[in-house]
Image 1: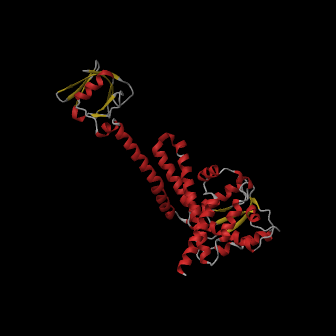
Image 2: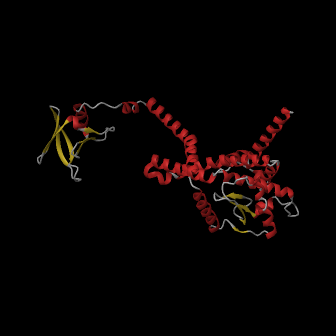
Image 3: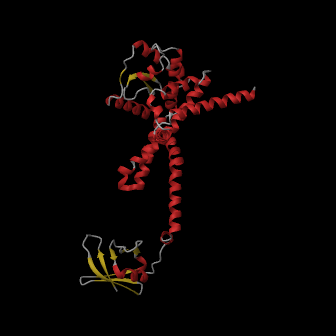
Length: 357
């Protein structure tokens, strides 16, 4: 016999009862009523440490047994710890399970999510890209990040004519080029998923010569930057990044439950960082391949990146270890690293040509 708390499953009122296991039956008795249930039909929830043992019955009722009567009841019901519980009670096995869990999550993060995001992006209709691009442009303008260009109409026209020279034979979506002033973005170029490419006034000024003229060298550098942005649009990087962030947020919600509002945000940002770093290099490769097909050298692209790298003289005083750390935390790989990578590709191509000759 042991004391317990009985709930009939119809209201929250508890009933103190006495339990007794006899002849294969679990009997409950109190001054007001008596109940009997076959032991084989009683479901025992997995007990935790000193928590009350919970018995559930077929009619929706339940019983909680705590204190000294808990273990005798478990013995009377023939309870035996499951393999999972016995594994948890051994710290080497628990540590192994933790390691396996971390490895599984890492595999899912680095391989599973990117692959799933790419498949989802492939299935998204072009209308999603159009809505996403228009919303992004409207948001940039609404928050004051993009303003009307302060360049002359002639200069804007010169820049816009460069886009046609780096378009693929059959673009995935119609593309257009906008020139906008943006003190907050500085020298920059943006590719929106609807085919809109935005070039800032500062980016144009960066490739101008000492006489503030956009000569042939400056046009070639700017054209290679546009080729890079075309790569983002052709490979649907925005849709893939959006899909990856959404998947990571859903996974975080599943793992952290009610804490997902906070926990889902950080992994989603980390995912976006990982995808953006890979996508920037992917767009670099696209630009180089396009220039090669047109018989143009990627040197102008390297020169444009070097101009971006050297535009802030204060960065030269930044310690190398800090620049490396900032590079890792950035959504884009550091410009110096991209330059080194492109130079390495050109050296490998030169060596391959020399061996053939």
